[in-house]
Image (cartoon, rainbow over all chains, first blue to last red; front, side, top):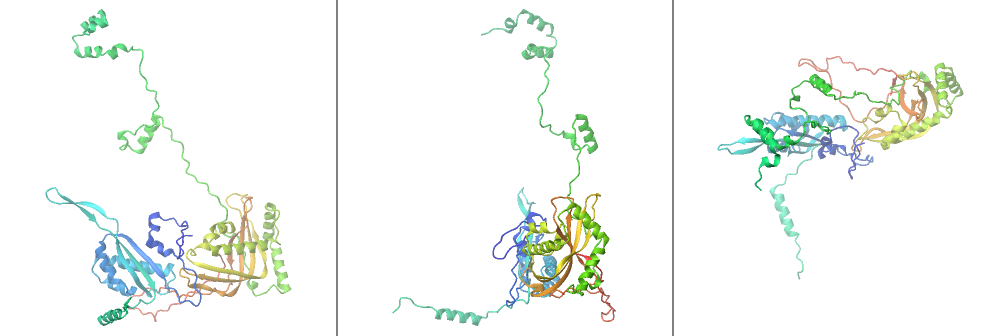
Length: 187
Length: 321
């Protein structure tokens, strides 16, 4: 049985036949860790679902803007924002989020599909194809046909609120750090 | 040393050259010393075996049938390819002629003498079971209906313990190939906790059948054992949250478990093959989480309250697990 224990990663031979390169990618493997049963007194562990899409025909830098947009939002809010965004990557990310939501409900025992928020979302460079771009005077440049990967981690529950740090708080911290200084080897 | 060719070869050579001086090309070939020296009786023949004959340049354009005929003409023999694969069938696909448990089986406790007698009589009366039992005893001389149920219960308990530990190898020896996916499906990333507390009634052999697969003599034996016991089951999901059941609350379970053995093979063992769920069985506990069942597809002018939807009741039918 192919399952990882959270503390040590001891791999068994997989019982389902998939291509080696797809199942051994680290983001997909994160869905296989099994936690031991919780004691009745413990607070319930939040379900984490990792999903990704590989080799999307889009630039990773352009994708970053969309990934940054939806970080920390609830899944419904994120899907709504992406639906009315005019970029090409928005449609793709929306598909990925809907897929991840479906997988969460079916396989990972998530009770309410709206009770998910986006904990991590980022883009990575995919494998590029190289082509020749012809310039004048017999000069050429190597044109990269750009591909990217998109990764997302959904966590069950209410999204954590970011504490907004005001200028006054920063000033207070600075003054406190000055007060905490100790002078060594003094009289 | 400036010695002329005529002095070396002799006077006859000069006359030969003299005859053919008109044809220059001929003269040149004849003047070649190699050809002059080799006698005509020795003709070179190529006998060295070629291990690799490269494919001809025009082979790509020929169709497969043409290539085949060329190969045959050349003498290349292609051995007949047998597109076969041997399959070992070690278990049947299902439960043949399943046992129909009587209605009041769970209510009438066999602590009362009447219940026990009734059941013992029922088993002896079933003629087909007796015939099948005789067939089983033919192949396995040490078989008896008295000590088999105890062994069967042991196999049952061991199989479930191996399922909780995910010990695939032991599980395959205790459970048939038909039962294995049913037990294991969906449990890959879950934690199971199962305990067999005690057996409320001694297990009994209730039904015996000997179906045959494909050939006439290929006999498999299927024995149904009735078990009434106390068990606890708790299923935890990937994150350690309780999905079903509870570890502390024991439940009384009445089961009809089918065991199977490939009687003809001497290396076969009695293994768990499946369970029979009777039609009058009480419904199971629901799982802890809530599930959304998608409603009907409605047009914009329809309203949900006005639609008369009837809840589909599950059919109470006996089925084999």
